[in-house]
Image (cartoon, rainbow, N blue to C red; front, side):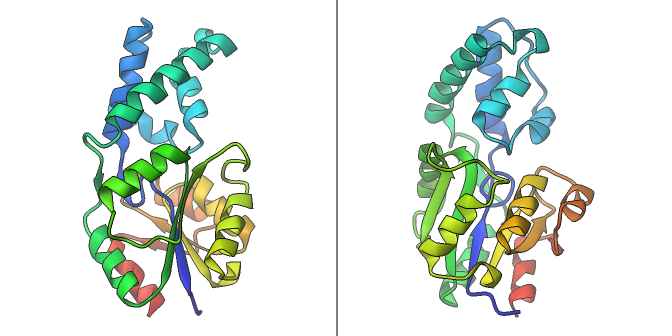
Length: 217
């Protein structure tokens, strides 16, 4: 199957962002006198956008519009300052991207994280990689799993969806890829399980980033 390009999810796929997300959210919860969460809990809370992360992190009784809005604003302020404190690339990602770039594949990033934060993290971790597009959540596009953003990136890359491979670590990513008509590949080093990925449309599962080269070969 010929692939001319690859779209990557960010959190749990390219980078382990969990500690910085959890630390920022827990500081917001503590400041508002709400109980905080163990880091592992955030594996199930991320992936559907920052507004959903904040709402699901709050106690049920506190999920009121005004409280969610206040905590979301506080989280964005804190996380913007601290989003690359502990965040790091997964082992093998830099080598993989180097190989893909050397073989002239077009690359892009698509996240449900707010676009300015997505760009900041990519610029910090991978300034040398010539991504065609780095796209995060923005008001003019619905969040994943709606395929609109993925199809927009497809147009920006000049590649038909069927010739794009989509790499992600969650049900949201696999559903997005399937709805966009792209080849869905799930990664097992991220935040979710192999069962979640397979049930939601993963065509292949990767144990290590460099395993992707075998699919492309």
